[in-house]
Image 1 (spheres, rainbow over the protein chains, first blue to last red):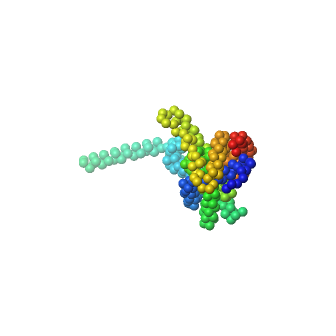
Image 2 (image 1 turned 90 degrees about the horizontal axis):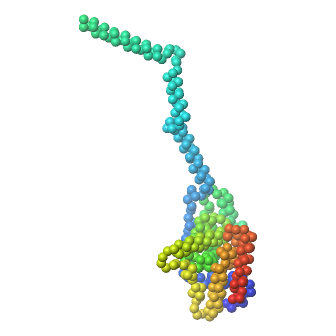
Image 3 (image 1 turned 90 degrees about the vertical axis):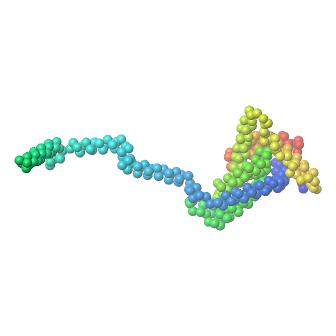
Length: 135
Length: 205
C-alpha cells in the first residue's frame, strides 16, 4: 500500500481515482449490480418487429397507404360527387342528353304532341262508347 | 475481428427484420455484462464527482446502462465505451441543468432553500476505520477530496475532458466521441484542465 507518490499530477490523479473506485461502498455496488442486470434483461428482450425497420420504411409505408386511400376515395362515387369539376361535367352530360335529337324519331317536343293527340282520341272514343251503350 | 463483431457488423449493415442467431445474442449479452461490470463503478465515481450526490450519480449511471443496452447493444463492443460515456455525460449535464433551473426557482420561493450541493458525500465516510492502512487511506481520501474540489471548480468541458482522458483512460478520439466535439477541442480542454489543476494542487500535493 505504501507506494511511492508519483511526480506527475496526471499519474497521481489516476491512482487516487482508482483507489476511490475500490472504496465504493457495498450499498452502491449492490445498486449498480441491480442496474446492470436490468440493462442486460432489456438487451435480451426481443424488440418489436415494427421497431426493427428503419424509420424511413415506416414513413414510406404510411405515405403509400395515404396515396392509396386518396386514389380509392377519388375513384368512388362519393369522391366524384365531392369534386366540383366532376359535378359540372355530369350536369353538362345530362343537358346534352335532354337537348340532343335522335335522327330516327324526330323532335322530342313533336313526340310529346303526338302523345297528347292520342290521349284526346282515346278519351273521345271512351265517352262515345259510354253514350252508345246507355242509349 | 471476433465472431460476434463479424455477426453484429453484418447484422447492422443489413438492418433487416430477421433475428440474430441465438448464440450471437448470448455472446453479445455476455460481452455487454463484462463491459458494464468493468465500467459501472468508475462511471459512478465520475458522475459522483460532477454531481456531488451518490443517489443522483446512481440514477445517471443506471440510465446510461439502460440506454446503451437498449439502443446500442447490437453495436460492435469496441464502440460501447465512448457511447456509454457520451450517454453518461449527457445525463450529468441534463441533471446539472435541471438543478440550475430548480435553484433559480427556489430563490423566489419562500421556505428553506434546498441545495443538493450541500449534501455532498464526505469521501472519508467510505474509509474503513482502524486497520493497518488506515492513515494511508485517510491521506488518499483527503488528497482525493482536494482533487474533487479542484475538478468541480473547472469549467464543465474541461472537467469532462480530464476525467475521461485521465480517469477512464480514453484516447483523444474516444474522448472526442464521448464529448461530441473535435479532437482538437479535447486537447485544448485537457491541457487547460491540467494546467489549472497543477496551479491549484501543486502546493498541496
